[in-house]
Length: 280
Image (cartoon, rainbow, N blue to C red; front, side):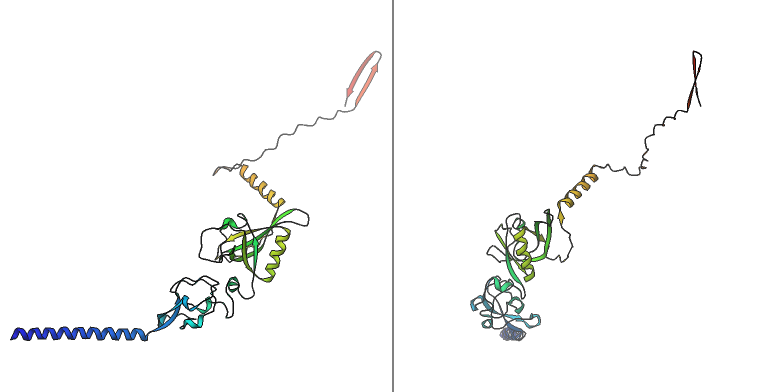
């Protein structure tokens, strides 16, 4: 009798525990649902210049406390918008990463307002051995003859964004690629500078650090400056260095030869057949 009563109590306790667990799980799920919002995220990696469709997006619950600014809840509102910056799979599609409404897909969507895109013909040397990739920054240098017909090299533009290499604008690649043309993002005045520079001289791209915003002024380098720098460097290499602690030797001028004493006046006296000389 006592055994059956104990078994009944155990069964009742187990049932109550299971019911409590189910109720707690339901309550946690409801709380989680209340603290999240649906967000439109990328269903796959999206490259710059891509025109969005509903199939490229999906809705995912996102914690309300960490909701980024500029998100979209309905993927339908993003149909036809163009990606300006790379968006990876599972990442929310934000307004700052989109081109203005009405922008068509392709390279035009990546050009900022007030800027232009101009292509420069390059080779392995001019293109910095293929390391000038989309998203990197370069300085533009021109080699030309000056007003005196002397060759001179001068950096004419600084910190210019590379939009594309050849026909590719993907910024995820890090492998160098030798191409025949590089497209740069410039202002209208910078576009005129590049067009004139490439018509009167040879262009070269100088790769720079993407976070380097310094603007070091240069006056250009001509042949006289180059040879003068080489001569100064050669003299510095040839001159022997003094030993530590050694007292510098004083340069002694060579002794000058004594000048001859000028001869005095001479009187010649003749007496008969004898002749005598006298100096004074």
